[in-house]
Length: 123
Image (cartoon, rainbow, N blue to C red; front, side, top):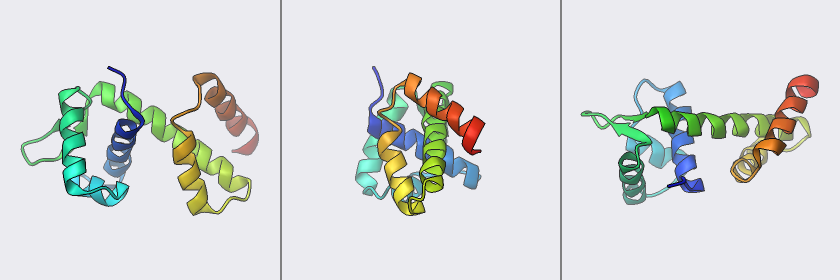
């Protein structure tokens, strides 16, 4: 079953937070994404059942190999799109929000072209 945009956002959040913290918990996702505790709990249960995340005995969250592949792809898109928008003069907070909206809908072909341009010209 393909993962939806909301699931991608959760996986991306776990990856991003795991770069900042030793252990990621549901409350970290609540704070990062701004969703309610019950909503986060329901989504995390679903992502676990679908094999995208693990939940440790201490309730810490981890990504499975499949979850990591998805999270890494989305997070890379987010970082590059945000950087490009900022270089174009967009306010950093707006750039973050807009990158989040764009990152899920781009085709692989379009993102690869953007990434190539970014690496060759803008970086």
